[in-house]
Length: 99
Image (tube, rainbow, N blue to C red):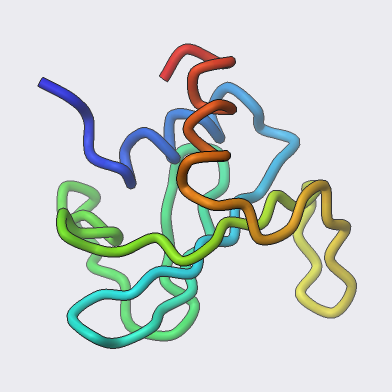
């Protein structure tokens, strides 16, 4: 069984704790921005469930782009490592760290 997109991105950030992922997704025809850092996801645009088993990025969500940002994340002055990666480009990075 493959892990969900959200779980894989969370695992990536546990292996690369110096990075924050800022993921732009489309969920049920609505855009959302999700920050993922050290294994945890949080929506920047809507409430995030308290239950960590409730995925912030549900199955069926469409990844629009992913930004890799240096930690600590400062929304006023983010330090971009890479901007607007596609899901395909991100999958190569996931493979590099074994998730």
